Length: 252
Image (tube, rainbow, N blue to C red; front, side):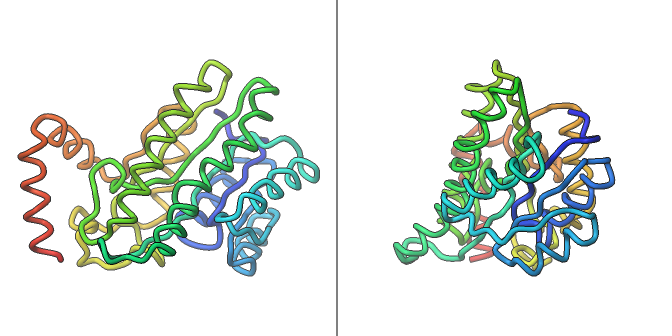
């Protein structure tokens, strides 16, 4: 997809990867970038920098996402690219409360599904469109010390794959961002297990997403080592699990 003159929506746009993506889309010549975030003031600040539009949106609510899509198309035009980027993390394992599991499920998985539910039919009717969903390397591998995060990111990977295989014939392109540690408010500890292959800045991650959208390929891996880890996982599952157990002993 050529981003020039396109209309894009970015969730989680107040900071981190979402803000960097909003800025990068503007640099690439997007006609309008709609910046959405639970932090409405932060979204507005990003929008001011790029002559975009800003909306305060709680992605854990389907009604908010539906309204975001409706208002964008009514006020700015048909959405060409929807970047479902907002996400949260909770630490902990089996002791994590049910309310916490429900919340992270809504944000890390259902927000992607709700966005697709309300924008994909519109895109398909117009002959095509693009989805960029942010998951995590934890969705391809796993995450020491954060069960709910790992599980919901696995689900996000599965949904993106399903969308790609189900709607590709209708002109819907899908890309999936799966980074390890990126310097954001959610992942900024250089000593964390996710940062062992380097803590990236959000800007270069956004640039790689732009390249992926331009090439219309599925997987965005800012940490290329993740592909090696995926191959090791599928080549010898038990050996891979042994290595993850060692990581768990080191970092838990």
